Length: 305
Image (cartoon, rainbow, N blue to C red):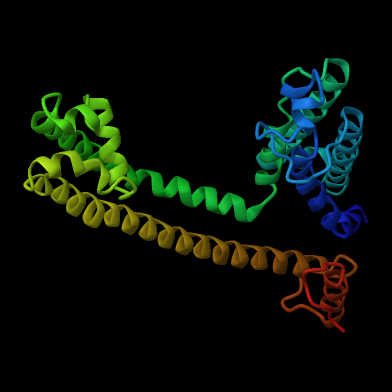
């Protein structure tokens, strides 16, 4: 029964997770607690975009209500799973720990000045990410991309540093290019990094190009190798890693579905026997009807007549 209540309340509980994050856009930040002037003025320090700004106690009331909904979600999970099964799951323990920290942070905010530092914005994002399968999948994709991307990234950094060293030898300090655009190694590496995006092209090379047309050989070679080869190589690595992640997720989903169906069949096979009989070799019609009636409580599954 608690599981049915959990399924019925699940959309509202998902809204509570999203509402926790959206609350950040309507509550006053801690750094403007001394006066409301910085928050409500037309200055660009904290643009409001016409959104209403909640007072301290209004924001705490909304936050407390949303945390109460999330606490009710955990209570339903503990009820239908049992405390032992709930605490045996690493995912449930992590989710419960985040919720306890969020509640403790809310209580501490009530007892401390409004200007005190809060962990709430970070805990809200962690809660939303933890309960969103799509976000976790994308984070897994980013994690998978980092390893193959590291090698290409090292090559790109080495290439920029080498070209910065060459640029210092060619233009460092004794030319208009060196005094205006490439005064030292750090600035040269930074300008060349921006040049990879072509945002400062051709401005970065104009002093040298004005003095000698041969400057196009250095900057042109950098653009050809960096932009047309290395950046495209990075893009290829990211696309390939994303493709591998999609295939891995599909294989994991298929294996999980087959394993769940096998376990469900064995449970139904053993539970369908009556009066101490041996497990049935085949599922009976009344057992399948009971399953269909139970599945009708799931909103994401089409109703079975």
